[in-house]
Image (cartoon, rainbow, N blue to C red; front, side, top):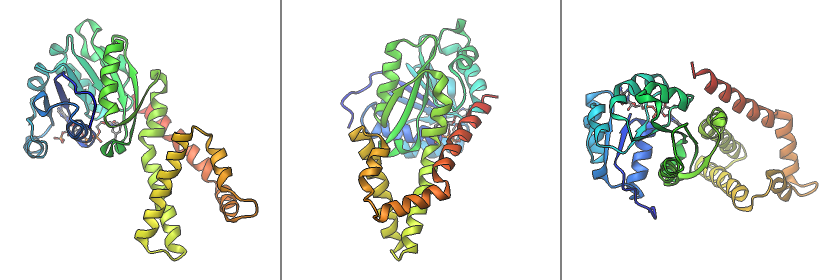
Amino acid sequence: MSEVEIEQRIAVIGLGKLGGILLRAFLDQQLVSADRITATVDHQENAEARTKIFGLPVSTDNLGAVKDADIVLLCVKPAGVQALCGEIAPLMAGKLLISVAASVPTSAIETHLGNGGNVAVVRAMPNTPSVIGSGMTGLSPGRFATDEHLALAKSLFDAVGRTIVLDEKHMDAVTGLSASGPAFIYVVLESLAEAGVKVGLPREVATLLAAQTTLGAAGMVLDSGSHPALLKDEVTTPAGCTIDGLLELEEGGLRVTLIKAVVKATKRAAELKG
Ligand SMILES: NC(=O)c1ccc[n+]([C@@H]2O[C@H](COP(=O)([O-])OP(=O)(O)OC[C@H]3O[C@@H](n4cnc5c(N)ncnc54)[C@H](OP(=O)(O)O)[C@@H]3O)[C@@H](O)[C@H]2O)c1
């Protein structure tokens, strides 16, 4: 449960996969009470379904949702941001807009919102492990966002994991590393589990060993603050088993493949700016 409760009213515009993960976490953490939240989707049938799932009003009426909100959490696809901002612009003066749309810069959102161009915007790039409170979110303030706005955005995303405030020039890299990253780790994890099956373990046991080992290794890096290479050396007994496995990883190019995956995802994030 969160130690703080946010007093502001929130409108979640685009209650899809990510919007739903964030809203569920805010409610479960008791960070915001349900009576201070409204949400919207594009299709009426989805609005009805999500009203039941979340137990709060979900509609297709963006202006109605934004009207009384203090914070607008924009969770639509990047291609929908411009039209959405144009629609809600007349009601945005004095509000904070937090956008999770990949690749869309705060400057573009500020321009789409008009209003003399001075609406507070914070760009956030979370990832899906937010659903279990283990998310990683990069945050960048726009030109008109104050420290107070940034602190408010941070308190929302702190409820779903770790947060880091970064210069916006790094946001495509955040997208390529930590937003796309869970998919890369799932492939590594699945491969480790396959390996366990290959050496005779039942699949559920192999998956458990692979997942808990991934969690443990990540925890060691975060808790100790040690360089991963030093932690790797601690596991690697001279002439033992691990060094033989590491040699296979080097020969198979795991290191360079992962680096190239993040570089490609980062480049793609930059391309999506349009
Ligand atoms: N998924 C991730 O891991 C991740 C991570 C970081 C950032 N993001 C960003 O999060 C955003 C959403 O991604 P997602 O994966 O959650 O997509 P999604 O599941 O497709 O959700 C998008 C939601 O927007 C709604 N929507 C579309 N047009 C609308 C409109 N005019 N008014 C109100 N609602 C509207 C859709 O409604 P319907 O349901 O009725 O179609 C849907 O619920 C994207 O910009 C993405 O870049 C995603």
